[in-house]
Image (cartoon, rainbow, N blue to C red; front, side, top):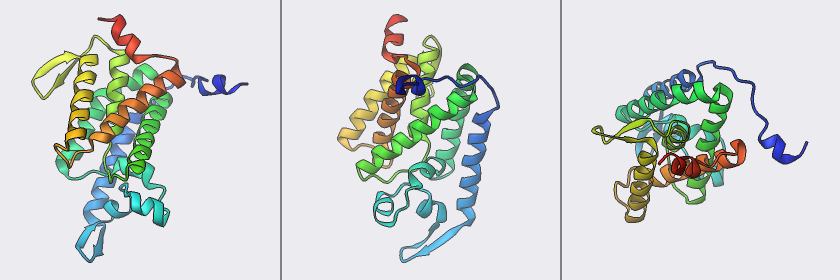
Length: 214
């Protein structure tokens, strides 16, 4: 069996609600952070922020390599996790039914870890599932190009248009440094990694899918 066929070997279709498992894991880690405090010279911080968030200095100098994976389950406040879990629910349930739970989970984790590697390469601290969620947005637009997505809580647009809008805005914000607390680099990385996943793993070109449905 050559490498190409191994990369594209399909999973047996199964549906086991992995979206809700991911949401539960995020909530458990968030609750853990409310009780697990680590005392530093600057004061007490959640232990999840120190040990599970992606901090490139700790990954490279202390060997905290697991942070490339665990960061996507750490969130910075109630609104952060609430919004991200809402997005995960909205896109995740439909994508999981369309792709099957195993393929969906692989997409989610590859996109999240890929985003973490990009953040590590740029020396950027990052927390949250946003990179993986932007990957899911691209996947949703690929499979459901005629679906409507409400952006900025008021404008319903076709899913591919939403991908374009968020990609352009993330690029502008990354270049200008606007909204510095948000990982715009992570958003862009999530879209790029998911795009490569569709090309390499699934043999689907999302851009071609968008153009064919204009």
